[in-house]
Length: 425
Ligand code: HEM
Image 1: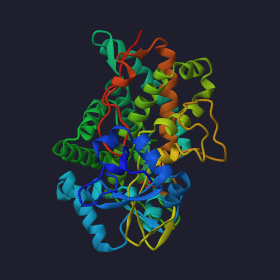
Image 2: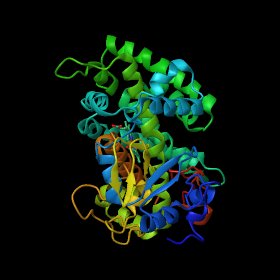
Image 3: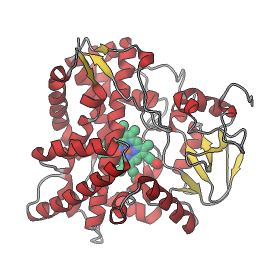
């Protein structure tokens, strides 16, 4: 292992040799940093964002093991550790006591039977069929946003993160859940509040959404519709088990939190990738049947989520030549796994005609195992519709700044553009 001129030299004080994934240098170029780890130290002790120790896992096979193996869980095995880690998170967010059950009650907060129960109940109504039936609405929402772009331009330049990436998924989630059209401008505002990075704004948005959904549940109980919320109210399993109101509200909040910013950045990262690879954009323009495969490839190449939640070992595990002890935290690095040359030939090359070598997906951009993204089908559909319509409607679309000047949000474990300034023609 070399120790100079690479991330092994970026460390926190008393722990020399351990890379720090919160280091700005590391964040600026995670592909190189994680790529080195993948080849030189595929399971490596490092510093997590809070400074605590964590194992970074960077090869695809190992990432799949961590996410797919019951020896790893989402909550630290020792109850006091779980309580402490939740407390730390709550303090970071600064969230009012009464709102915590909603925000800390997402599917990712549960393991084992509790997770299976919740996931099964929501999956009965959030089905692939529902997602397929939503397609005409996703197309209409997309066309409406694209219609508006010329009037949103300033000096001929539009920011696609603000005007397309963000509004599309939040409006689609409103459509899915069954939020009336008239309330959607308010939801877009809330969506902005959630991603503003301002904790006080986050708290007031959560409170507003919780109150809003509680009222809507009452309305749908009185007058059911064909939407997801009515589905959640009606859903029950063979034994008659159903979601409580708190669980339903937490579920809607989960969908908004998990499905909004992620999809927004798939759309903006993917658009930036196509604009900087005009031959690939041209292939899609001339043959839209390539779009589903292109979304897989864009997820692999520039997916917005670089790391999952932390996992914790429940017992001793040998992985990548090291021993992970019970209770130790593990961070699977999705972006590195997606660029693992053991599974993808020439992984740095963007190729929208690429087909996965084996069965299933060639990437873990939506995770893997029991917590595999519940909204993957919806996100893929939004991507297909968004890229297809954008290329068709604005064939002369081009970046308004040189590619190397595109500004990223300096956030570890994520890949987000701060802005995507384009000229429409
Ligand atoms: C889980 C990525 C869109 C809902 C996950 C996970 C990843 C992911 C990596 C696994 C996290 C872990 O194991 O720790 C993405 C990306 C998206 C996207 C990259 C867009 C491009 C969506 C959408 C929804 C959604 C649109 C819903 C409307 C969820 C939920 C989970 C999840 C509920 C938790 C599942 C569970 O714990 O069982 N997502 N997601 N996601 N995602 Fe997504």
